Image (cartoon, rainbow over all chains, first blue to last red; front, top):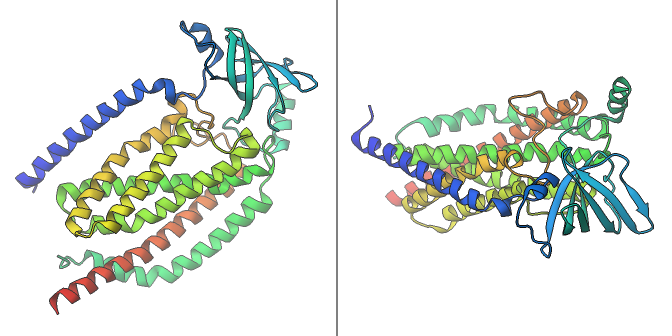
Length: 142
Length: 236
């Protein structure tokens, strides 16, 4: 059914697709540093050559009971449940910022455990539910 | 070239079902809109801005789905020299393009109250912009390359290259750290959207797919008529 011409085209196409796939994998792999939007506290902890003068982003969960507000100044801890980073920030946090929720902070590292942010973004998770359901869930957990 | 009956058959089929399709769309879209904007509950953390999701998520799905179709049609087109495929893909492209734009804009509206920022260049958002640009490139090739065979070849290549972007969009949230949240609806696990929100989302999705189908059929008809007219002129 397939003529010789069609067969050659299929082989050519498969080869092109495979090469394309390999190329894209290589590109993405080499760009990984730029593709990753933020680093987790563990990634920062394990990283060897960290720039302290370059802007980076740290993301994770806001640790429970770590949020402290002192006038305009805000301090909290970002955790990925393995390692932690203390973040200090001056300004308003987004409305959806809250403890035990995702957060991404942009700023500079002072050292591996201390981060000075100049921008705070709230990261939402993939869970959607009405408030009543959330309450019921919390009740059954307690 | 158009001696094969298939394009005409689709045209006839279209005429018969077209009105019913529009009525069905109006009913489903109204139910979906009322359900998602009024009846469905607000989210426990996002509040009412969760309602943006009912437009955003279906738009993104359709934008990806349309390009998947265009990509596959491009492959069939290049390999088998099928005459129907380019017309189908060409008719579908502007719809997918608009939906990718809707997805980007509504996502931005959602990002401001949720993340605290309109736009970030994380992997998901960037790959979505790339999808939009592929659509633009695809449409412009058809628009500005006058020779049919040349436009056909060039646009098919764009369609196939753009195919690589689709898994990147889909899995960007799993492969890399992104500000965009991971998918709530996956093939492997139960959805993490409560059913009171999942139902209106599904209805909206179905309604928007119907809309896509309607506009697609309209555009397809126009394309066929255009080709017939051009042919007529040629032989006069």
